[in-house]
Image (cartoon, rainbow, N blue to C red; front, side, top):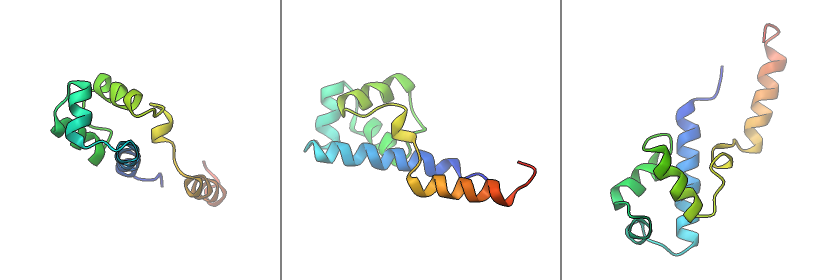
Length: 91
């Protein structure tokens, strides 16, 4: 069974939020810098899979985040995948 895609979006959202806070920016200040509302920033921080892709790319650039790597799983996810493959001969 594959990891729930909701977790990917939420993990990316947590990374966005952490990067914003590390830069000392509020959602409102970051939104103003990008011409986005605080609500748009909040949506991406809750689940990065939702929202406009262009806005998401601008947000990642402003936070110095790689648009692809922000969704990459953690090391423990790779272990889970390896165990799943080993347990499933038909994979």
